[in-house]
Image 1 (spheres, rainbow, N blue to C red):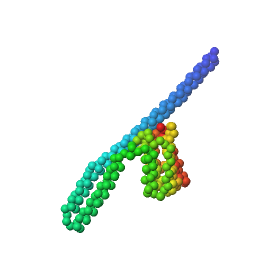
Image 2: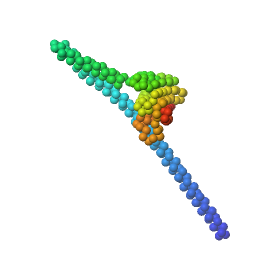
Image 3: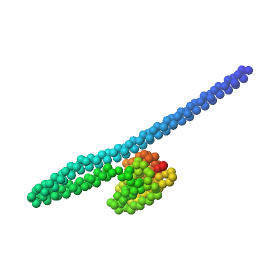
Image 4: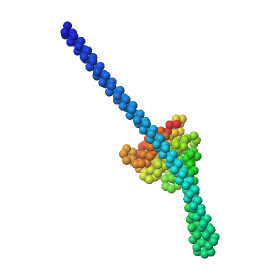
Length: 256
């Protein structure tokens, strides 16, 4: 009888130990799952905060440029206009030919400066990103670069020009600018290709050059690529980058 009781006792203890071990395992599993969920939630909140911060920065930059443009037009522009009128009056009232020539030169410089400031003011206050279609904005960036450097550009587009938000257009234009500048400055490329495609679910921007490339896995990839990644995050874009001795390719896909 005692032997039977001992066996029962051992079985009960074994079951209790097994239950205890299972409970510990379950606790560890659930604890790790909870920690993982909290970590994922934190990452989502952090990512959302960064997106909101970068979006606010773009808006603030736009407002700052418009403010500077208005100040140039309303303040500096008016003063230069007044100075130009004064020189014209001096030239009219003065009778010494040699002094008149100097006054006319000053007036010409003031008028040229005034014209340049007006153009600058217009470029800052006239929000082309909001008014122009996306394709036209990208084409304009390619044309600007092509006018100053010996590099062959091609721009292929198969995307609807209308219906894109200011934020999306602004981010894409800045990414194109960043890629073009980096390619021209560092890659020693001869050809740059820009492609814009659209499906029902995605808008895809593909950029590539035939330069010397760089080590895309290096920790110090430069501020240019960092800026591109941050801007892509604003519009929830997925970024793919490949670079080797034959060139660099960057593909950005944005959900619609």
